Image 1: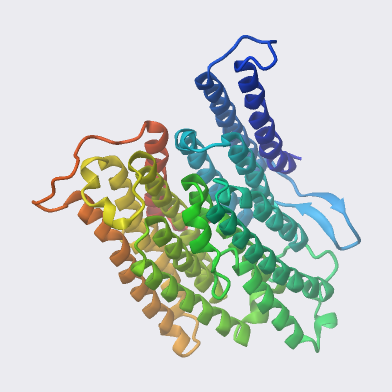
Image 2 (image 1 turned 135 degrees about the horizontal axis):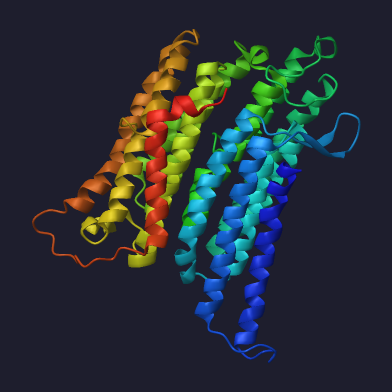
Length: 496
């Protein structure tokens, strides 16, 4: 029950907390004449206090579920199709990443969202999506993963189209269509895996395919698995289903962009891990055309995303292309079908979540405080926002892969996994791609910091302090600290 409570609490409490301020605001206008009039600042303060409390209680309930939660089957649709929750080591690790980023973003959004309308709607969907992602982490079988994977999509579309402009609506629809298309491809794979699965169909490391039933159908199963990998990989930006990312991220509010890039896109990673390692089994795919094609697509996506980010001039769009590249590092690691690859992928999942989340929060500050969206506008900004730019720089160093940041450790482990896979040219080609991508990442991130702090002797721009409040800076500092922690202790925190 602890796990179920952790899933439903943020959704219900977030909706309730979002409705109550609306009523208070009506009364503050004298709409009902029942309670004394109150200022909008008081309404906002009460609302933020409720949201902060919801975040803390959700984190507490999730930690209780991590340490004391027990497997529970909520609904039995049929004999082998159930809605089941079971937090194993993998789910716990993903859940911690979800809690870290969501908590940081919520406090940051208290100030940022004052520039946006319909703040209550934004926070309501944010908390519903949090509940959906907790459910994805805690899912005990593929059906449960799929159901809440879809719910995570439907509840995050409003975050993308929040501004309500034509570009925002178009971006939200593109995100929705891509995600639904990918989910249907994933469902195609789920059908076949369940059909050829052993009784129960619950997750187990090594897979649950029934050898007797699946014998003679290997080609069909491999095709279904590959389609499902591409489908679930849509959320993670895997080529050729990556098109929604550079459209949705720039148009969404910065807190939503941080969540989409940092953790929501990784719902696809969770689904792929559950599909490959816990349903089909890595041994079933090792050495097949599925593994080779998957690895090639991941490398292509890494290179393409890095190159597009290098050429992009809009700050948030550059970070979106970077996300396409960086999440495919995880896909590349998983495609090695090795324990080392999984470890490297999980370390990169966490380090990228906190680093890219921090970068999008920094980009939001540039917009919120200065109205700057283009990379060229950030020259000399370090003189106005030293704390923000130091956070941007530290997060950038992690994405590039500079020790002792988390990005260095994850890329090192991924490279070791690739070198040990023994697949001919695919043994060393991933390492080459990783090095090229690291150089491109340095090329599209580090010059921003350099020109921000060292604009040149002829710089005559503003120098007055424009740092935001601690509501925005402390979450970024915490995310930078988390990235450093992963670089120093990442291997030790993996629980399996």
